[in-house]
Image (cartoon, rainbow, N blue to C red; front, side, top):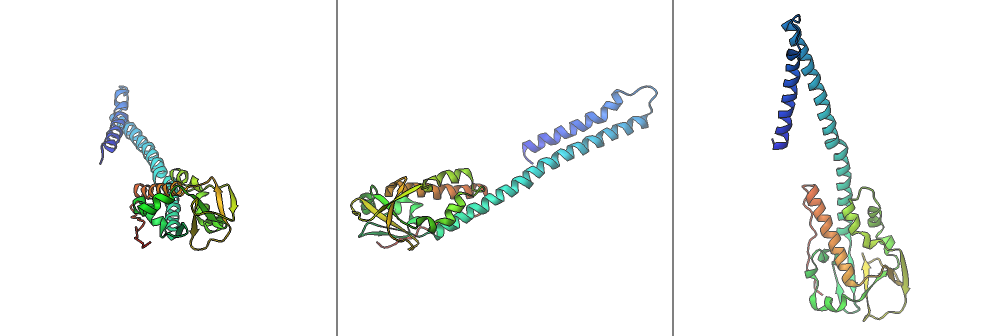
Length: 230
């Protein structure tokens, strides 16, 4: 029993003792001992009933509504993790391909240094149908059950416009394919991303999501860091 609960228990006992003693302090000469005891026990019973009701309301709020809300949040976050783990992003600079990009992005040190250092400042091109492919993730982004701290880290996916790029130079752009389902034409998004900006935003989203799960549940979730040959 922690100090907080002990203090409340002592307060409860004191209130009951005060309630029990008051009838004796206000007892008249004509009042019998049995009558005074009866009044004392009635007061104590009433105080116990009131305190029990207050505790029940507090516990209902803590383990009832609040618990269900947290359960819905956890279900939503776990669904998001599942969608992210199923996600396969393939980034290409025309000669080099970055595989299992989501899993590597949880730790940016896993990206190949020399090649990534050249590509990271390039603008990222998305397939025209990226929204349809990412529709399950966008649905979770719009969910009222998604915790605000995770939703905030997903804001970079809030793309509001695109512009077709028919002819592009790999010296300025890299392409990102999603689940190998991307279709032409390739588009620049608004807001526009460099490869580095997108990498950092995705890494922050993944780490924030895992941190939230660790703080609010006993579930162990990891993104496997699988090394790929390039």
